[in-house]
Image 1 (cartoon, helix red, strand yellow):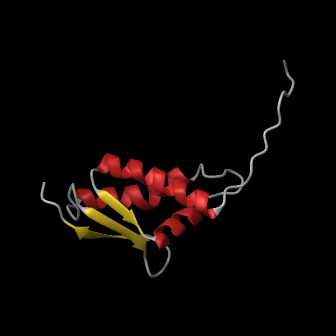
Image 2: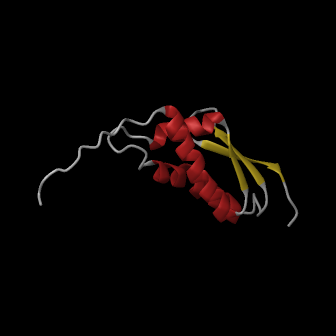
Length: 109
């Protein structure tokens, strides 16, 4: 009791790891919303920058996805801009400070 049995070395995550985590977390968002949400490479990079902290690893990614993807997308769904079954592309705004959303295809439900 009160002793260390093993030492576990953790290595920092690289960009590829963060991008994969973004895609896994976004798959959950897609499943819940019923829409196909596609992120451009720029959007993945934006979320990786906003959601990665060297001290905390990928833990802040969920919060970044909620803030920059889920909340705005939910607002657009509620306002009728998107409907269930739409294919939505998420990209970085030209200003680089937020994400943009546009419908690629509209599926009749």
